Image (cartoon, rainbow, N blue to C red; front, top):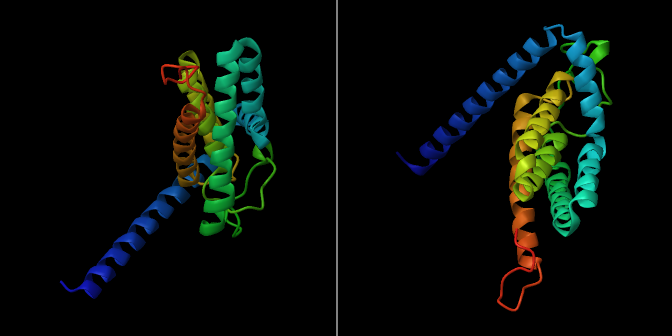
Length: 207
């Protein structure tokens, strides 16, 4: 097989994967839209709104910083750094490259009144809410192991809420979650490198 044939085959493979992913996305969105869940709608709308601007995560970081002493402040600082990394990567870099339209942008489907949230004008891929949520959960959960499970559950609910309320496709939130997890990992490593060292050469505050 020559090089041109190989490139053609690769492009066809990528196109088919993208088509399959899009079909799965639209099928899940249609299933969610077609299922009436008025009680769940209220909870998920409030949760999605609470995560706007990462307010929910900043509030938790404030509690941990106030109650956790020096280690708590360090954990909160790392988690806020992780949110910053995730937000800039998803909202400034990846969204500008993808330019994906949000669900319903072409007139298909209709979000019921009980699920309506503020609809961003930015591209859909990836989800900035999911990125910030998993960045915070990843960083804070590693610093405070007792919070790992509840924070990841909360992050998962926020990510699903963005699909439930019709502003993202499932692949948007999956990609956002991956960006967030990597941002949390990066923030922890950056903080470890920047931590002042003890005379023995170790970070003054072990992570």
